[in-house]
Length: 127
Image (cartoon, rainbow, N blue to C red):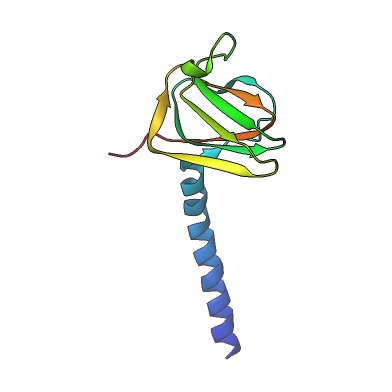
């Protein structure tokens, strides 16, 4: 019985050693999120980024995030934004997932109004 348990433990350890790199590769290549963005930031993500969604966590009433396909948001208006997400109630959040990801050729910049924003980005969509 002792020999069977030893073989079983050894088999489980080998299985974990083989499968662990596959999980890491999947997570690395999937959809990711930025760290919390609490101030307006130019070039949050580099040129050639696919944006899958946006989230705002309201730290005050009428919080919003505007996302731009630009190296900087300075001089831009809301009309220039690829998306704007707002939340009217303090301590609530709003998430928007795009049906098709948006390609940002120039980079991704964000304008924040009283909240913490997150941008979901990842690899090019598969066909």
